[in-house]
Length: 628
Image (cartoon, rainbow, N blue to C red; front, side, top):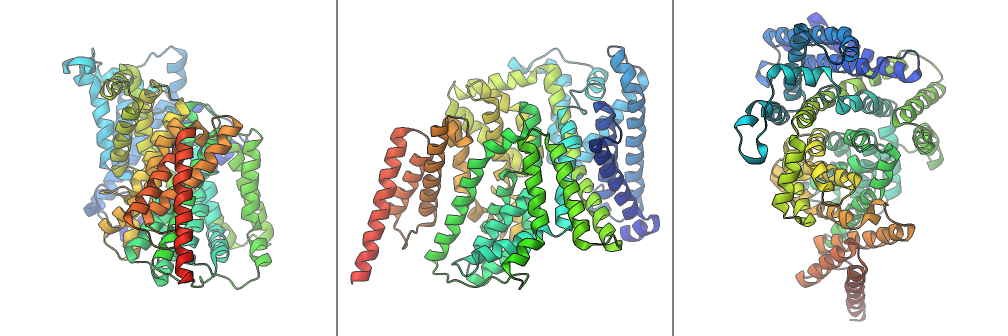
């Protein structure tokens, strides 16, 4: 069996060793112990990431545990090492000679391209590998295509060499971001988890919501928000938080599919919650060419509206179902001051992270120093460097590096796509096609982009979906007058919420398994609960204040009307305010929410009048009941 072979060859220890080496390599670069060129960092990073992917993921699930799979995976990993070492020895000569290559460069490049396809298939899924392959084949079939898609074509050797010896292909911006931003943040998140940040966040969340109506659901919202800042993965967040929060919600009286849906939605929002968002956010900063602090600032109001909406929704659902306050069991009976003192090292680490970024440090430098501070405080806290400490330390290094391996495979595959777009001009052609289909109308272009983003996101992790959308579709939206940041944030948002969009909703799948509910029930309920998040991207495209891109007054008004609109939509979706509402009142609440979210003075006035009228009507209804 695979486990027996693994123990015989000590494969798991070897994987942890490679992961620790990868983590220490990048942390050493950040600390300034030694410096290497950008190309060398990317080559080394991908080489080690390919080893981790091939030895961690089987050829196919049925082959897992067989000697054939181990031998094949080892062959692929060693081939990746050999090809990478060759390119490491040649890249400077190729660069300084103006791009002169030899036959062995082509052979090494072809090996890397093939391995990237296989690593993407194993680590991410067949969908990404097929999409990348379709783009890779375009230069060879383009001479036979009609209309805009026709081009002169390129040779196989030309494409392979461009993709592997230039910084616009496999070793382009996506893998560069994985090797700089993403790995440091995944390691930082792994250290937080290993040192107990998850328990601290749960304790804080449960104590804040204790003795309130729907305390379990509200704990899920707060806990998933806090933990989402560490994980940046919807399905991963559900797996960690759902085991605690879903049973609590079921005990309170929520149906299993409702409890699973709530957890799936709030876990999805973790990817858009500053300061530590999903991996795609770091890639966005690099592609758009803005500081990561700007990405955080842009994401702030939409993220708050997202969580306010679901928080209000779970409360109103509890009112509608007459769910009473049930105490949430804490993990500790210690007093408040002790809980805060015990978790102060996590709060300080986040404070250092934010302070460094806000004062102009790069995200990876900020996360590095936040990580150093966390480790130092942990040493001071445990007061001894015993075996347990070192197990947590090296375990966190291994966890962080191993979790970035499939992301790096996705980034390398996205590099193939962006490289083909660059060499063939296909990107400009796709932008032209979208313009023609939209007929010059921004709303139509946004709708088409939304459909494409959700479909891609159904079969891909957020990072992979965003990378494809960012290189293929986002540039087309800028042709309609949107700023690059707004266009990229639009596709990023839909890439995130695709994890709760049926029929393929990865976050809902995980939540359904924990809740013991039908996947379809959880998926469609999550879509309804997350309805506000499907509307927000359209709203911030027409109202830049929601992205804090307007004047101070516009930003404040956008925040106020956005909060009111999210509240109104939640009322309309749940169908309850102080008491259950009829369909006419629910439609009025929904209309008020849409009017308030779409940023204009007439719509804000209309939405305010509708919402105020609904609230006054409910107040009078309640008074009439009391009088009777």
